[in-house]
Image (spheres, helix red, strand yellow):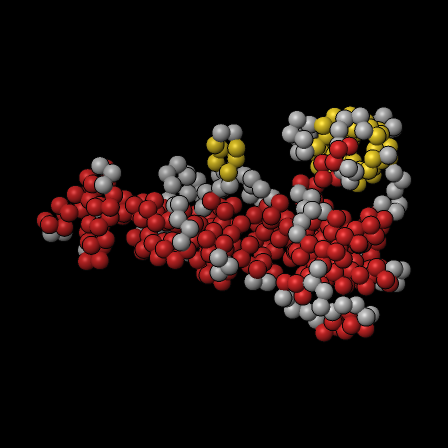
Amino acid sequence: MDAVTKEKLKLAQRLKKENRTDEAEDIYKQYWETSQEDFSEFDKTTFSWILYNKYIKNNEDVDEIVENAELITEIKKQQDQSQDSKYPCPYTLAVLKVLENLNKNNKFEEVVMWAEMLNPDYLSPKASDFNGRKYPSNKEKYYSQLTKALLKLDDIDRCYELSKEALELDELTEDIWFKWRLAKCANELGEYDEAIEYLKYIITKKPDWYIKAELAESYYFKGDYDNSLSYAIDAVLTPAPSESKVNVYSLIADLVEDEYPEEALQNRYLEYSIRLNKEWSIEDRLTEKIEEAGLDSENTEYWKIEKNLKGFWNNLRYKDQQPQYGIISRILPHGKAGFIQAEDGNSYYFKKFQFKGNKDDFREMTSVSFYLEEGYDKAKDEVKMNAVNINTI
């Protein structure tokens, strides 16, 4: 190493200590292009952290993130943190950030390519703890980003394999999304019972409409049409944008066509109207059904069709259940939920959106009728019966 290079690299280290990182970066970049062999491990580490903190850590520009991560992977090697993760590795953090942002930008093939730059056996399996909250380990982050991309790419076998591996991590902070991907893969592989097992676990923690819709499809492919219809109806009655549920309306139509042909047609009409409104593709077969039935093929006001169908959906949802009766005994301070004291002596939790009566009647001591549905109590980590479809009497 010549004397000038030696002094310049020492200057860069000193500038970094003085928080003059832009000046330090300029020196490191200049000499990296011409004198890489003169960089000590300390110089490489310092240079890498400057790049990571300035261009990657809090950045959302995927191109800039990738550009600087590429440079970091030239400068440093991945550290083996499988046993000791006391000191973070800029190489690892940079690549994980690339995976995250490529996924956000739907660049799934690039995610798989970048994931090859990490040796998962070197990644720390230890979750971090901050203010009493657990955060995923680098190994969990790796599996999370890679399996997400693999599912999007329909690489079912590998997604299934790696999601299974992820569930075996000793310090796994979140198993729901891995089980979601396993359920999706199991459905594709024709393992419907396995998919249903995963989905039933997920729905106790996350009762979102799309989990219910996936359960409906699993039961449908299994040939259990009663359970399929039950979950499909739950899905369409769970709050979410109507346009996101077009496939569920089609499924309901298939399931009720023999017994309720007119309502089946209206479910298809709802799907058709949404697709027309959003300028999405419409299958010729669906268009033919709408035109043959004499329905307005130019109608884009799908919300009106949906409003007319809600009564039918609710009737199907509760047709095998007797209504319960009671009074609203308590409304929580935030006004978004409460409890009903029922005639059977039990107290049932409910959410405000389940109250279908006049808003002026949403108060304590109002007499109501309601139905029961399984819900998940996060505080007690248990499944309980909640009040739903609440009406004044």
